Each structure stands twice: as C-alpha cells, then as structure tokens.
Length: 380
Ligand code: SF4
Image (tube, rainbow, N blue to C red; front, top):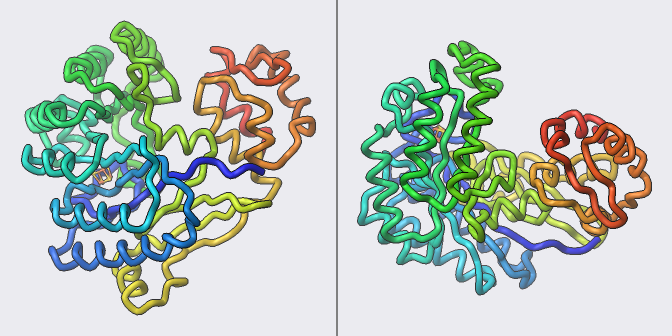
C-alpha cells in the first residue's frame, strides 16, 4: 500500500437555521461564547494531530460546515494560525472555505483572503427568490449576487453550489438559474440535483418535485450550457474551467487520505498495511466538554480499520465519481489488493458496454457513467 496525499478537513457545525433538505451535521448557532469555546476545542484537537501527521505535507485544507462564515474573522484567524503552527503545508496548498451568501460582507471576504484562504465555495443553491424561500435559505437572490461579485474581487478561485430539480421548478427556471450563475463567472460550479435524504423534514413531507422527463431534460440542457461556457464535467456534479478542479475533493475521489477535526468530522489515514477511519461525535457541547476535560477518546464516535472486504467498494465508490480513466496500478497501490481478483467483473461490464478494459487502465464509457450505482452493487 502506498501512502497517498493528505488533506485536512475542519468542520464548523453552526447554522442560523436548518434547511429542510440538509442532512449535514449542524446545530443552531449559539452565543459568541459557544463559538469561542468551539474554536478553542478545535485548536486543541489540531495540536494533537501535529505529531501524528508525522511531517506529511498537507495538500489541501477545507473549512466546511455548517456555515463557517458564521465565525468572525478573528475566530477564523485563530484556526488558520493553528493550522500553520501544527502542520506542514505544501507550497501549492489549496485552502477552501464554504460561505453562505446571507453571512458574508465585503470586509469579511477581504479578511478571509488576507488570512490565507485562497478558494471560496459559495452556497447559492438558486437565484430564484421563490425557490430560495421554499428551501428556507437565509439569503435572497440579490444577496447571493452581491456575495458572488464581492468574492470575485478578492478570489480568482471560487465555486458556486447550485441545485436543480427543486420543488415546483420547471425546465426553463432550472436553466435560467444555471445561466445566471454562469454569468457570475465562477471557475468552478457544483451543479447537483436536490435529493431527498433520510431523516430530514423533506423526507417526512416530500415536496412536489419535477417529473423524471423534466429532470432528464434539465440534465441534458444544463450539461450543454456548461460545456458551451468551457466548464469541464470532471465529476458527477462538478464542473470546472481548466486547472480549477477542486484539489480537496479530487483527493477524496482518488481515495487520498484526510484528517478531520471538529464535531462530526471524519478521517481516513493510510498506515503501512491498513486504512484507519475515525468519525467524531455529532454533538457540539459534548465535543467542547470532552476536549476541555482532556477526555480525548470521548470525541470519537467510531474508530476502526477498513476491512479488505470493504476496501474495493470504498475505493470504487469514490473513484467512479470521476470520469478520468482508472489506472489498475492505482487501485492496487491504494488498496493493497490484487486487481486480478475482480478482473472478471470488469470483463462483464466491458461486455455490457459500460467500460473499456485496457492493459493498464479502466475507461468508463458514457453509458457506464449512467450505471455507476449498479456497478457498485457488485462490490458490496
Ligand atoms: S446552511 Fe448549509 S449546512 Fe446549514 S442547514 Fe442549510 S444546507 Fe445545511
């Protein structure tokens, strides 16, 4: 097994209110004191990993949530200082932070850039006020446009998250949303279909979603529009101008390692002969209390090694999201397993027109891109 590149993920689990479709871990924002205590706990956790990362270079940092932009610039500065103090950052490190249009001012955006953040991911989701109201977003169309324009002043590298197939949305509205986002000129767009996740208010009370044939047309027209504007479709829902693919997410999808910090964060770390996974408890108060009282083991919800049976599934679960060819050597290097044991499955997919199996790599066909979930079933 080779040791892959390492990314760092930091979870900020606060939101102003919960959006009804969202299954990410976040809690309603508390008082300033709670956030200060959370940041202190986070900084303490980062210091613990300083030694454990044993000098490995961090290739990307992602501050996600929740809503990281609910922290004030001073709190973000303390986190950034702790990152620089405890880790060895690669010279070309990508440092991304998620931003919610309802929580950013131009001053704050300028500060984020000054603090060393070099990529912003703005959660716009829609530019239609009716859709934004239905999604219970805290921002409106104007605030989203102003936030994107301000970000563009300070960041060459920024992403806009946009959803489609929203409650009550028709083809025209979905494509208009995408067209308007393209006009804001981000060099990366995450354009993804609203899905109903378990245990969310939408799952308990499913809103009226567009019919399948409308959704198919949204995809076809949307892909065309993105292509016309030079966005390359490099992952299931990610589109980037050349050279602006998200390094941090590419590292997940190529089965790289990542260290997580904060309540609800996950880690995957390759050791000499196995892969170690950890998840942290989804409970901000308990996380803060445990860190304060030095009961570090209490912050972990799960702590285990990925079994050989699960490794192939986990590798392809990530890797098949990318449309680039899969080197057979990469599978063997990153899992420590032998491709010959699963060759027969890819020979079957080749006969079905889902892949081409070349001497040293697997190439997913256009048809195969539509059957990724079916292929994954074979690895469970
Ligand atoms: S703002 Fe983002 S993280 Fe928070 S509830 Fe809404 S979708 Fe989820």
